[in-house]
Image 1: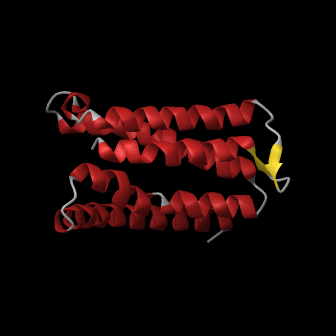
Image 2: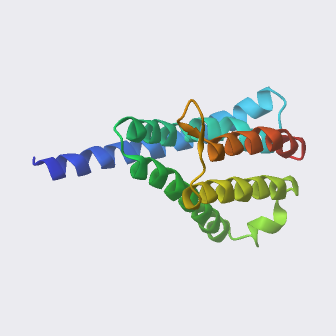
Length: 159
């Protein structure tokens, strides 16, 4: 098997494992949310994203460590774009009218937070913010953390 075939084989095996894990994670998150007395919104906001974001975290950190920042950032932005596309696919597949019209209003706050964070990251790509912490962490990084931590409680309170 040449290196290209080997890479495709590893990719297909990895993707298959991710699909199986996704099915299991969804069931487990639902069971955990019920056992802990949390609503489905909390499970969707905290439990599932924690587990499902681990591949992006590992891949992007690894890309940064091997000095491939374009790969790291492309992975995260690509993942975000694909996740939004998944909403459209799920809406089409479930076939009971618009999924968006049946959600709790608290998701509007989560969507707004996502837009604010995405815009902040986009500005960080467009505007050369100065490195302000130990000469290596830019203002946009601190803004991303600040906005996220300032707003996440508000999102959680409305689900």
